[in-house]
Image (tube, rainbow, N blue to C red; front, side, top):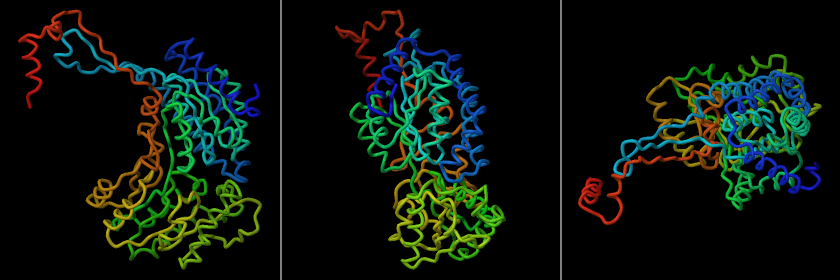
Length: 478
């Protein structure tokens, strides 16, 4: 079947095929769901090296060790978690029956029913993880799936398409590849649910397209996730962890620390600590270091270097953390050294857009209230990070900011907890998945009430009498 040659036609046929199979076979057993999960686990365990190599090629250079952790092991962990818990998750949930609308012997419960066919639109930054981690919830909930991966990571997308076709029938799970035209047609399909991971600007188009078919959405977006470095924090330990998060995947992470608030008297100390952190991680240099990942393509390389040039032109202090003083103008890939921008102003582009690269603006602050006020004056972020041992200050920050999630005394790590939901709020996303929340997100929560055989409730029907009036009057009390 030619899927890419005629956008819409082939994909519509695939969707119809999966929907027909869902109706034909009915709700899959726990054993069938585990079988689907096991296939993905085996696929990743068997072909992880090939997928890591494809990602390395797509990025120009991507750390294979990083890919093994974030995309291969991370996805297997999510799938194993779903496999271990799905038998418990699928059990109906009892709910309380209220009198007089229900009586002794009546029952209320929630049943978790597969929605049907889920459309997954996965991005380029973690192309394997953000395809297979959602499948943990999709399959655990008993759904079938169509996947549209990014055209930016073409080799990885094509390999996933080939491998999934070997492990699953087209009625179970299928990958559709192609450019923006295919992606646009994909979002117009009448799925039973769509999960989109990517940019907020693109999400608006996805949401508009889905609206025509009233398709429910989970949007995993991003934004400018802030760090507040408290005065009680261990400065070097905090810098080590912040810079590890900022240089992982060269900062091409939706949850990467986007900018940091640093106490004004510690600004230069933090720069020194961040410099030391980078030197410890990349002692041999960055340019030819297998552990340091490239920017995915020329377009994003130009975008990120443009932020630095704009900030420098507008008077910001720009500090390149380049342990060996390497010349990055001569390189085979698109590597950018970690760079700190000190006290940028809001008219600088680096403070207006999600950076999605190894650039860290730091803003000096006097009182944590000022940092919180700044965060609250901007879009709600996907992640927020607080470093410090001051419980009162920590509580103030957490209670007076709203973000998709929080990691305290580190960055990014809340996304790795399978028993915590992952998702944004407002411009950083809607809905959540991971673990049981993923199962629930891709399930229809069907309310079922079973009435008692007793006819005592006949008093609720005309002609109304005193018993009826007494019951209603009792429910009308404060």
